[in-house]
Amino acid sequence: MRSPNFPRKRVGNYELGETLGEGTFGKVRKAFHVETGRTFAIKCLDKRQIENHNMGKQLKREIAIMRMIRSPNIAQFYECLASKNNVYLVIELVTGGELFEMLVKERGFSEGKTRFFFRQLVEGVQCCHKQGICHRDLKPENLLLDGNGQLKISDFGLSAFHENLNEGMTLTSSRYLHTTCGSPNYVSPEVIDNEGCGYDGRKADIWSMGVILYVMATGCLPFDEKSTPELFNKIRSGNYRNPRGVSASLATLISKILVVDPRKRISLDEIQQHVWYVECKERPME
Image (cartoon, rainbow, N blue to C red; front, side, top):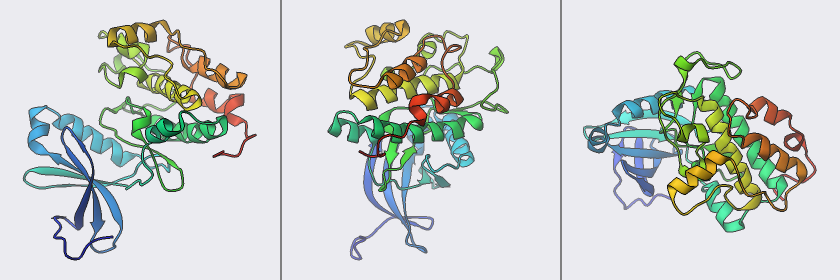
């Protein structure tokens, strides 16, 4: 609840409240719309930091991409404001924390709970891919939960856009992505070995989803080494620890996602038709 005695900075029609998090380029703060009383999250980004890191073009792309996407499983973007020193991104306030925090606390989920969250992840990513958008940094830290346990994909800072590309289309080499990015444990082999030849960002997203699926089901990473070079060698090999305590159908689905050759990796449509994905034996959140 807002304190009437505490002076608040105002940006447009928003009063800025408590700090929710901090990053390289600024802070995320809770905000209140002065006319409606609705609460939002506002990313307050320092223009000097953006310029110093040559991130202006990337920020414009992130804003353009977020404006395009509307899905129950993606943190909604509302508007962009600016002052002399800062850029402000007004986004949906998601109050349930990160999926990562829940995973650490519970050390993995039941298959019912894993399926509950994975289906939502698939729906959100599919919405992106249908519009030619690749997230490129999918990981539990970028998956938020609202008060009802609904999953919301966030942080499109590394996302990219394939113009006029629908989900089922095959990329020609001229339309491949060429930027090596993402979080080391979740990055795909073709992104690691990207040496100018490029890669299909949709397939890279699917690999990251497979790692997330494995982590949710087991509480462990499939690829984890002390040094980044050793980690990348393990990812390139595609040899991961067999998931313990999971059903045969889930183990099979994971094996179809974590395929080194992206051309042989399962698609989102095929994931949605897989027997484990369509099973509904357990209560969703048990």
